[in-house]
Figure 1 (cartoon, one colour):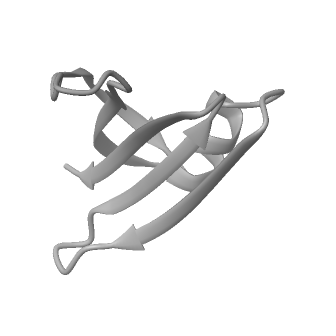
Figure 2 (spheres, one colour):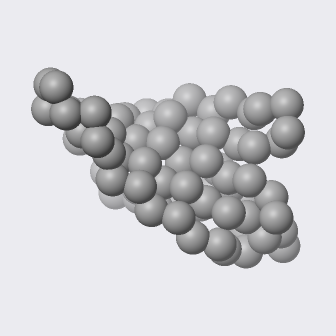
Amino acid sequence: MKEYEVIWEIFNKCPRNQMRDVFVEEIELEDPEEYVKQKFQGKEVTYEKSVLADGTEIFDIITSGIKQRCSFTEI
């Protein structure tokens, strides 16, 4: 297993309000993509995965009409 810093952002849908909810945790995982699938299990969800040059895996997620993002950086 690898240890990751996970940043989960929930974007605000209200116009003129650029604030978002941000949650940070450190967890051990085999596969970040599997973590995302389990986190939103049972919900209608779509996501796009991208990988930054430093290896950070980013998942841009849409569920229930709300945009969210999970970023996984290996520690």
